[in-house]
Length: 319
View 1: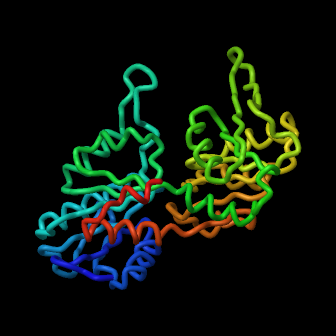
View 2: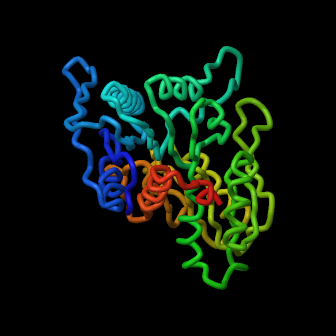
């Protein structure tokens, strides 16, 4: 990597140090020296143990569970870099927490994603680099540049090797109406047809009815979503695809493996044969099932960081 002008430094807080280390390794850089710890009363303390004056600083931190702790770590680190006279600070957030709270779903709801955007900007970030925001319009919540990378090319390459020239045997399925655009674009990459799971509650206290829009009978289904949290929607959709749709098999794919609450147990007991995730969120040992495959995204973020540092366009990475 050919550096120019001011130097570049990669730092990590506590949410995903392995990814930060991989990014630094890909760029041929040492990981910045810093310590992020918590006092006994829960306050977060940050120490930056090297000069960042005039540096182009990238701080890597997914705001995954515990979300609030990791968000505060990020904000305090950004503030520390700003006060240490860093030339530019980029918040590298592979998984952006609070992204599902992007609108008022009912009266008196907060728009927490906008609040988090304001906090990151106020802390002193000059730019945000993230991947597959749950709601793309969140980019507009920031008054600083936001590069929203896409994970579908990585997932598509993985499945393309499996599918080969048997495209007609596979169908990409959206687990709900909100993910249709994502599933359509993914299906276009694989040259496969698309189907949609439509769920509706006919009246109060009556369970949801699942309908399959499209033909999945006898097909090998790739069930695609941007994130898997408690896995309820995903597992129910998989059951409907098999029982009502008559599909041959179901594998699931998602960018963010949040996997909170009963997710692991649900996946274990579901009709899903395999779950393919990107490593935007680190998986703890108890979540590393045999049926879960994790693909690395550090090469993509490394390229994006290099492009940002060298003032090259990042937009070619969005297609």
